[in-house]
Length: 238
Image (cartoon, rainbow, N blue to C red):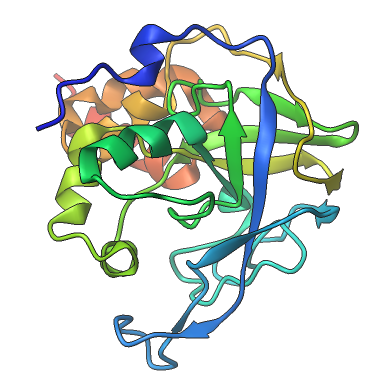
């Protein structure tokens, strides 16, 4: 067990928040997916860009919000509320120490590897400007799956990832445009509520009693999380 403090416990927000790496995936045949076509786009690789970012459309029909990034299985991935996936480089570094192995940018299948911003500590509905044009809005945390586990090759990975509670964030595209590695990130809106990505993740995975605490985030919540919270409150009313 690694008892070293997490970087977010020892570092305040850095003076410079930026997009450290921009990562795209291609459909790749693998032996570990249970999908009939046998392919996945989880293996994201860094690119300098620029890459066009726009709202892709409804889940189940549309894929990634990044041009050139392949989403293979639209039932669970892609769509407007999961258009872009971001992970903090600081969290990857934390996992490197715990796992005792290197984790390159894109290792978690993230589109954006950030530096200087606590992604899992971001509030639902928080908006980031990346570069000069693009504005993204935080919608939810990422739920791990067995493809993610097999991609990393770590036993019990789904459980370990869930227990740590630092899932990274899915984001919507509010204002389209182009981004590239090295672009500055600016938080241009931070909601007044206290519903963070980490709280939302815990509520929909391991601590369902937290679901009512998600409601102050309102329509900024991922629709599936909002429906879960409303259902829980209705079932436990009175």
